[in-house]
Length: 393
Image 1 (cartoon, rainbow, N blue to C red):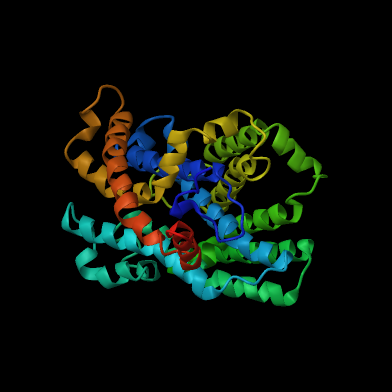
Image 2 (image 1 turned 90 degrees about the vertical axis):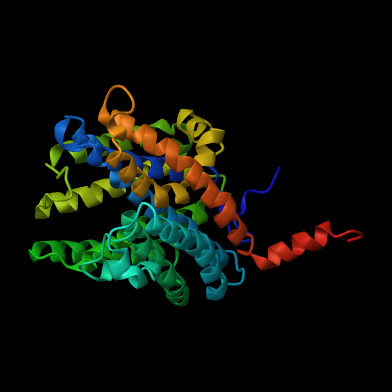
C-alpha cells in the first residue's frame, strides 16, 4: 500500500485514522455553506436558515480533530514506553503544516480581492495575534481567527502533555485532569459572557480549550483500548452500528439549532443561556460524528463507506486550503452577482460557484505550497527513505 501524503502522515510509530481525512472535508464544506447562507441572506430569510446558520460547527470538528490527532502520539509514547515527542519536532511539524500556506494565502488575497484591515494590522495577521485586539479579530482572512486559537494550542500542548506525564495518572486520572480543564474553560467563557461586555479573551484558547479537550479525551480512550480483544459496550456499539452516533449527532444538531433561539446573524447578540447551549451542542454533535471514524474504522457501515469515498478523502487532503481561500473568493463572487448565476436558490448558486472556484485554488495551495513544505516534517524518516532508494543501498 502506498504511504499517505505528507499532510496525512502521523508522527513515526503512530497509527493513521484514514476516515478522519474525510471529516476534515465535512468541516470545511459546512463552513463554506454557512458563509454562503449568511452572504445570500438565506440564514435570515428562509426557514431552513435556523440550520444553515449553525453549520459553523465545522470549526468544532477541526478543533476536536486537532485535540485527538495531536495529543494521541503523546499519550501513546508514554503508555508504550517510547521516547517522548520532542517539542522541537512537534513545533516544526505544526509550523510546516499551518504557516507557509497561510502566509501565501494572506499575501495573495491582500493583493486581490483585498482583505479588510490588512494595511492596518498586517503584522498581527502574519503573527496570528489579531484575535488579541478588539479592532482586528476578523481582519484579514476572517476564518483565520480559529487558526490563532489552533496556534496557541500547538504552543501549549507539549507543555501540558509533559505536565500530565510528570503526574503519572492512570487512564481515569488523565481523563479527570482534562475534564477539569474543559470545565474551567466553559466556566471562563460563561463568566465573560455574563459580565455583559465582550472580552477578546472569549475568542482565545481560554474560551475554546474544551473543544480541543474532548478530542484529547478521545485520544486517551483510543490508546487505552487499542488492540484489546475485549471492548466496552459503547465502543462495540459504535463499531457495529456506526449509524447510531451519527443519528444521535444529527438529533443534537437539530435540537440545538431549533430549541434555543440562537442568532442567525453575527450582529445579533447571544443570551447567556443560548451562548452556552450552542457551545455545548456543537461539541456533542462533533464528538458523535467523529466516533465511527475513530473506533472500528475498519468495520464498515454506511457512514464509514461515505467517509471512505476517494473524492471525500481528497477534499479532506486539500481542506486547509479550502478553509483559507473560500470566504474571500465567495465574497468576491457575491459582489459580482454569483447568487443569480445558477437557477434556484441564491444560497445554492453562491455555494456552488464558490466551491467550484475555491477547490482548484485549494488544490494548488496543497500541491504547490503545503506538500513541498511538509516533506520536511519528519527529516529522519525522509533521510531513511532516501537511503533506501539510493543505488546499491
